[in-house]
Length: 281
Length: 201
Image (cartoon, rainbow over all chains, first blue to last red; front, side, top):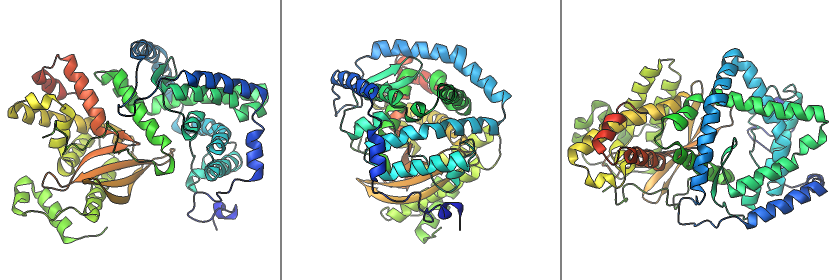
């Protein structure tokens, strides 16, 4: 019997029950505290201002001119600060240490994902993320190790932008945020709400909350180092790095939001059968 | 891995080069299992490259061989060039396709190099519209598994893949954006683009 089975996970099954328990829904309710309600009101006000998305076009980018300015700014920050710092970080610390920091930060993000899993009415995913959090926080030594992966108890990524998508809110226009990078109007609102939501941060004393935030910044350095080739090629080798970043972000994000049955949307205009494409013949 | 005779003859033909292939005669219409078999082979080749511990340059050469053997580079190149392909001469299209093959192998070779120590696994295949979709999963160390989807068609006369999606990112659409931007930068000068593409990626 594996560790997973001893904890009640059936073999070969990434997760278990799909019924939402009373407990977990009241857990979700308890997060609707006054400050969250305030954030929700602010978020709704922002959403009301979302530009309508034309479903027949690949994307809406009415802020392209200012987005491009932000993109230039982000690139200069990357070139002068983020990239060099990440190179030092990656060179000084050995891979297992970097992996540990990254695991630690990922683990602390799980409670927030559980709340969003529930808001998206995906109790199975909430249970999977909760199981993962408990498993890695204990057996994984506070989340530094990731033994949950080896029993296929993978992370089920969720954020409030995704929750808005599930609730039927449209994507809105493409936005490039200073320091935070590519996003959409819907995801900007999502980020604000996730920041206000922060279930684990609320439960932690101020000092530990700082550790959580710090870990996520250090993880960012690790990611910048780990994926340096790809990120460099997008930012510095492509002919139009703004257009590339926009295309990559939107395609990947839409795919991710597809959830379990995520699949390329063959009906979208950014996909066309090249054998039937007028340009191709 | 299943070994149906038609696939074996196709692969034998491919291995022997383009001329041998034309002697193999017309192929039967592509089936789901043939599409799957093709990607089984692609994935096996990619897995052996990413676990070969060869140098970067050698890996890029390996990826170029994989692209040449299993991908419809001609249609991918033409589609990436977009409207400009209409005005291009036959000689320009040949030169562009050649340069594009190297470029795409280096560029996607870099992505696949991040898979070192990991593996791709073929899940399932299904017909979509006029082609086949073959889904694979990439298992990388320290990361949640993610999807890499290949689209396979026999419209070129051979069973080849003509597009791939890494976590939903569409190679054809992305390259059309990039090649379009490169062409704009060179004020539409296709010959300049071809020259620069030889070292890009």
